[in-house]
Image (cartoon, rainbow, N blue to C red; front, side):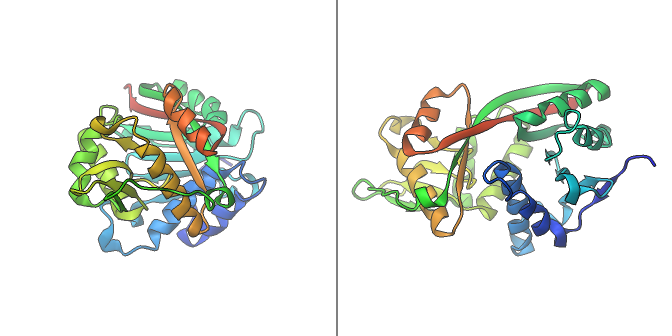
Length: 285
């Protein structure tokens, strides 16, 4: 029988997510991805810039309960994971080979380092061109540790969610804006602001000073005029504390080349558990 991708219905997403609770936090990346989209699915459709009804999760031959292998498709983004390390993640390789890569102008993928071998096989077999390739440190803090963090804000400063009023400013400060198209970047940040938790530090004039809009600390930024004042530390600690109050752990993606940011997260108490790769590809044909 030939291999095929079989969709995992959305009502089974919680079961898929909970597979990754085993050996916690070994599979926390996969847990976080599926849980994020499940949470989005529960929110009113009118809030979505990209309707989550268009998000699909597939397995290889319907075997996800046995191997934890899945591919998640969200417009120009693909997430993938597998607990099956047999033959160098053969089931994940086979699943990725079944993707119709020709229908994408560009594809953005975040994945754990151990799965790079599977993607590299597919890139070679399908003649895909890598246009961006970054490695990040993947940091983790359990909610039990985060709940004890204490944050002292400067006088007249306050914390609030980021709104769409700040989208243009946030986009132009985003260090990854040149790695994908402007349309894709704006759409991504807009949806994250609308659907995910965020923390912004505002001064007495309500200017946005430091912020993180994703809920995973992947886009932590401080405006240039206020660097090295400890504001990013305040945002990280407040975000982790708020997530802990919701019974959520915290995790962060920090570019491996950004030594100062890595040191900042480690000084707060985050522990590095693996590397993540962020790859953007285009079809070379």
